[in-house]
Amino acid sequence: MNFNNKDTYFSRLLSERGKPLLIAGPCSAESEAQVMQTAEALKNQHIHLFRAGIWKPRSRPNSFEGIGLDGLQWLGRVKRELGLRVTTEVANTKHVEEALKQGIDVLWIGARTTVNPFAVQEIADALQGANVPVMVKNPVNPDLALWIGAIERIYNSGITDLAAIHRGFSSYQKTKYRNAPVWQIPIELKAQFQGMPVIVDPSHIAGNRELIFPVSQKALDLGYDGVMIETHPDPANALSDAEQQVTPAALAVILSKLQVRKTNYDDADLVNRAEELRLQIDAADHEIIAALAKRMALVEQIGEYKKLNNVQVLQLERWKEIFRSRADWAAEAGINPAFVEELYKLIHVESIRQQTEVMKKEV
Figure 1 (cartoon, rainbow, N blue to C red):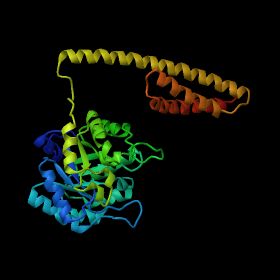
Figure 2: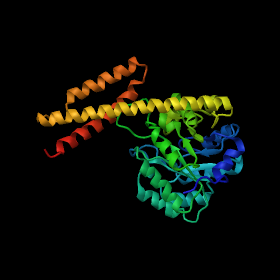
Figure 3: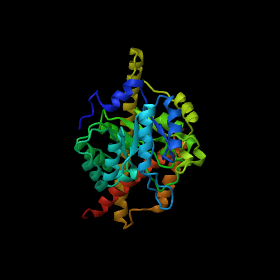
Figure 4: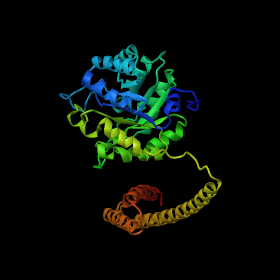
């Protein structure tokens, strides 16, 4: 798949007003008045796309699940009367057909759909022969292969104007986010699909409006191409996701604070200094790898000792002590303890694997 074509729908949008690509609008289209009021407020903020959910299946029934086909008519009015491009989510063949019939400019595939290859393929089949840009949200669970697979299915249907939306991932662990960002997954996606726009959805990652700015800024610092922020004239009384929506006025404040970084150094002295620091980082990494090799050699030795003395591989109390003490050491050294905890989880998994291999060896 080639995403390095300079003349795409999204590149043309960005050439109009520059980076970042701005997508805003309510989580759900609730009434014609609400949609028009929001769109009129956002028109003055020069957004690239106006968003609104029409079909909103929730985790549990008996809650507001979208206005349905009437909402498409309202988006059509936004497009005709205000001149804004519009986008909405589609989850099946019928949605695609109705959205295309109404002239929706951009479609997006939601996280609950991306997780299901059957559903994505159904949408891909419905898009055959269509000339419409499509944005693909990451799956609910942190699975890069599913995300890539969904993008590939849509691409294979003939849709080459594609973008990815990072909206975070469900997690069994309690965090400050509604959906953990797990930044390494979209970073890997960017590396595999160079040239394809990647947009952050800080509303769904954050789950509350206070975190929308810092999540947006971090994404831009990582080279994301745009932001999708849920915007409602009266968030407290929104029919869905009230906590994560902002007013148009609050959106204006967020956008005014966002900084777009340069993609490269534009001064020879800065380039030279950066290269010096990169060489020092390379040297430090060599030291880390050498230290890991030394540690794993010791792990193998203790594995041999356990086997010789008929002792099981996993020593739970020892692992708890390592997990606790290394985080403490990290804090003393000024390193984020949470980072070190995650690092030692990986080291522990490899240590267990290595000792298990020792146990399996024939005497």
